[in-house]
Image (cartoon, rainbow, N blue to C red):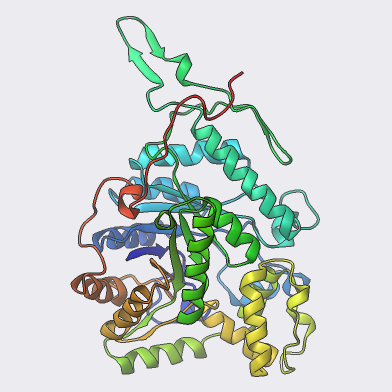
Length: 443
């Protein structure tokens, strides 16, 4: 089993109000550092830092309700990962990069640098972004259409990998006696000219220790599945039930095989929001308290931005209409959410609170033993290769998941007790891409 920890203030939209929450509302470096070291001591595969390139302002056409009811400050992922590289030794470091609003050369250079600084522990989560708010911060009135942004993402991945391959592993000779510093035959132009990017290269930093930092992708839509099956090494997915997770797992593994890949080369990690208590009763009480702390507007503003559709136009106490055809943002995730809400006859306010509990992720509730058993059930049912753990809130002291659930998984023989090597590819059991001329054209 593989386990990644989502390093954010807290995914549960009532979490910041919980009395045990250590979240300051800003960028809390001492807390991030403490949790990173705690996760590494538990032998987790990776820390994962998500991103969004705007403050959500779709709900009501303004950011007022977003700022009023939700935590909106978030650290920039790659600079945070560089800092975390200095205070950790083995745990992987993954961060989000937008293929819609980033330059391939800059992204390739920064990620290569983090891989060097960390000794080969970097990963990048390529997202297409979702909202018009993000577009407006980057010179566009509206976000790219669904199909176009995935075409752009595929080309972005291709260019970044070409840039990493523009250096051979042995390009730096550093022969002091002869005065030869580098081997020109081991360095090459990229000369990429595509529909979305025009990049000459080569990269002006040595090839990353892992060859390519590990590629993460997140989503569930049909377009996403094809892209991830061709390129992703880790898939971060939203699946609320075991049967749906198992179906998705089989589908993406089969699709990867159809593209000529070894299915084992793609690790499927559904997100989970565990609510753990010292016993089942305490866990249920914690779950009920967290739910009581949610304002409907917190969930509705989050949904509006992710779907690119303003939910403030519907009365809070009215049933939510079927708006699946109006979603222009995150389609695969919200088509299921809306269909489920309509089938249950939920009001708009009820949907906001329901979604804000876990953002539609699986949320196991119980004692450490009960939560561990649920994760083992998913893993042994071949519904996943592990999980991305999204804490409801961040705690200053030891939390029950890392302190008690993980040891139970280790005792059950489904999770490691030590790191198998130095790099994130070692930890995930992934091969290292080859290098050298011949992969891209030289000028």
